[in-house]
Amino acid sequence: MSAPWLADIAERTLDAGLHREPVIRQPGAAEINLASNDYLGLSTHPDVIAGAHAALDTWGTGSTASRLVAGTTAAHVEFESDVADFLGFEAALAFSSGYLANIGAITALVGRGDLIVSDTGAHASLIDGCRLSRARVVVVDRGDAAAVARALAERTEERALVVTDSIYSIDGMIAPLRDYHRAAVDNGAILLADEAHALGVRGPGGRGVAAEHGLSGAPGLVITTVASKSLGAQGGLVLGSHLLREHLIDHARTFIFDTGLNPAAVGAAHAALRVLRADPAMPDRLRAGVRRLAEACGGEVPDAAVVSLIVGDPVAAVRAAALCREQGVFVGCFRPPSVPEGTSRLRLTVRADLNDDDLDFVAGVVRGALREVGAA
Ligand code: PMP
Image 1 (cartoon, rainbow, N blue to C red):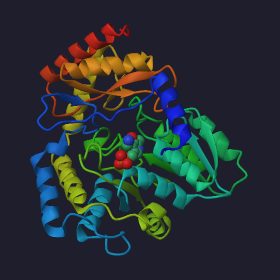
Image 2 (tube, rainbow, N blue to C red):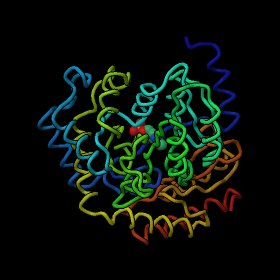
Image 3 (spheres, helix red, strand yellow):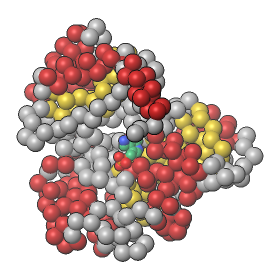
């Protein structure tokens, strides 16, 4: 028997148009997928698949234990070292997901009696890290660096952390990272920027927004990012100083008590990093596609690879996404609580491996679907 209140909640969720069903992908489906975060199309790249296979052959199917016990392989540390080198930081530490990397980093850096300044664009994993830390949390408007500085200057707590997405995940817009960083260091705080949507997409050779803003390896800056988006694999990363890495190994609970990242994911992510390094123009090709699709759909051209098309009503958004799918175009559909009330939307993530014909076809289908539900 299920808890009696579950049925009530289920009914209300359904009535509000907010019930969710995972979309099931089938093998060999002939559809264009713009609902993934596989920005560079690397999840199916032969070198990346070979990287996963090689790691499976060497290490088996699991990391077999937590990182501190027996779950750290040579592949883990070689990957961490290469990512740190690529992104211009002293050191990196890999977690088994980006979600856990954010929670682990935040809760290891601050706790009860400390302050966190977050903004309204922060990803759920940053929000959960803030909550779990038990620090006092001040939320400012997204992009408002002056408000970040004010909150830090007015604090009574000694230690403070600023957290933000460098590319806001909902609409692919960029955060004023340099201003946030200045506000943090001028006020004796640390800035943690989540570059999940920026790796492989922005910055020189896909090194992200921090690199684009000249902040690679800057004191007072911690970067988190993921292997699960443009690297086409799985896993989270925290980048900073050697001291930070040591601190996380000693204190980040999601590192200490979690089974180490799967070796196949490490092998895939490492191979993807090599592919990206060898083809630094990949992110430029991606952004040209983003511009083409956003303009053709009548949406705002984003800073990154996420094209958001506002529908408004959640039921209409679901219907528009279903209409696209019927015509072979798989798009994301975001509704509250993932986005604010009244801003349900189609979310299209462009991939560097799609050509202009693919993108023009997608734009035609999406425009038609939006018209059909009265949103264009
Ligand atoms: N941060 C941001 C900004 C994200 O969009 C996501 C993924 N949705 C994560 C962190 C979590 O990463 P992962 O999926 O690797 O857990």
